[in-house]
Length: 97
Image 1 (cartoon, rainbow, N blue to C red):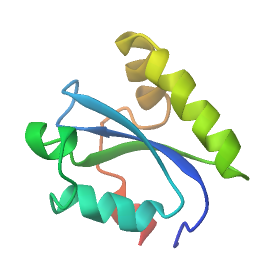
Image 2 (image 1 turned 120 degrees about the vertical axis):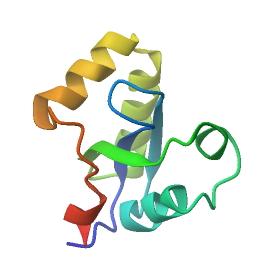
Image 3 (image 1 turned 90 degrees about the horizontal axis):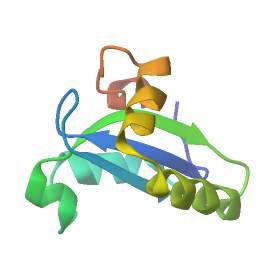
Image 4 (image 1 turned 60 degrees about the vertical axis):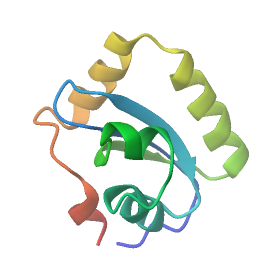
């Protein structure tokens, strides 16, 4: 399944590790870039490269609004969001291919 539409996503360094919230129009490509440390900055520095949650949106505007909202959340809320659909914190990248 190739997701070429707006998505909000959460990456983790490991279970209960460092979290990163992002938005993209191409989840497969963007996740691949994070996994291969092609993205300079926070995710590369802290080894945050495991896709643990994502949400598809109809428009980029709605995805950006959701990303901004999640970035304001407490860490515990983000963990709860991940564990609602991915209790093992499995890397979901392979499920996108």
